[in-house]
Image (cartoon, rainbow, N blue to C red):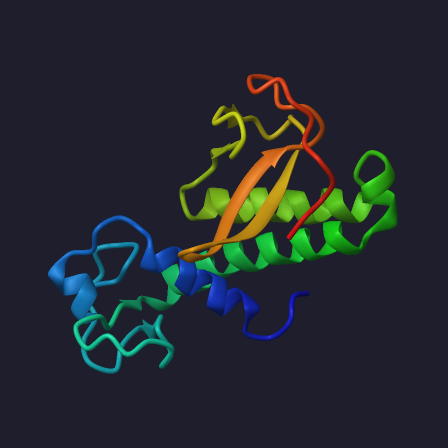
Length: 164
């Protein structure tokens, strides 16, 4: 499992750049991911004190928070494994990578996001294709993306080794 707090930090990164929030979502009175109305003290503060914006108080209902956190945590665990596994660097993914991948795909389905696309060729990748997470830093912060393992079909170029 990834280090404590990593998944929460990554979750915050994807919320900040998500679709435009309604005023109610910015104020924390409606869940970020569903229409559940949140009363004071209900829900989970996504910011967790990590930003100083006064007009941004996003909260999530407990089921949405748990499901979205699971999606990000499975992504981080899979990415961390790929970075440290010699077998995954040298040839086809090991059984552990396969289990982590399956857990991530299931977590994405649970939050209604089954499709992923390759950051290199921008094609949607099927669950039966070989692809992997690609966590990287942009000028905006952490970026959670995916890419083909091996050669991108449309881009026609080989994906270099595993990176973070």
